[in-house]
Image (cartoon, rainbow, N blue to C red; front, side, top):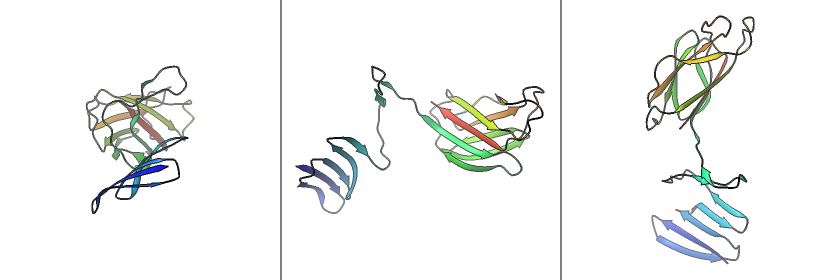
Length: 165
């Protein structure tokens, strides 16, 4: 037997049952938590306080540290975001110099920034070096892409930034 609990804004808490063998918790008729014999599913945007921990076959449960913001953008010409998560905008500060503005601020500036890019100019050697142009803040981080052989800034056609905290 399955039990469904629905917190409705019009009828209050409503319980119903069927023979599917699951437990569903709903908000206004939409399931936000489902538990079946094969596992648990959470749908929609849910807020949970505390640490998220799990064991993915490593022998013990540990806290999961997630990517808090990320962006993939074109850093040539007029800077344009291709796709992002928790990034409000990108500022072009000059050749190869960008500021990533975080949409929902970090709790502090003690986070890790990971950068990667795909450069169209390969005459100066493969790869890029990334450096912080200024101390990060809870609201933004500024990064510069440098050519390794010349240590000159270089615009990036594909620039990716991820922030972990």
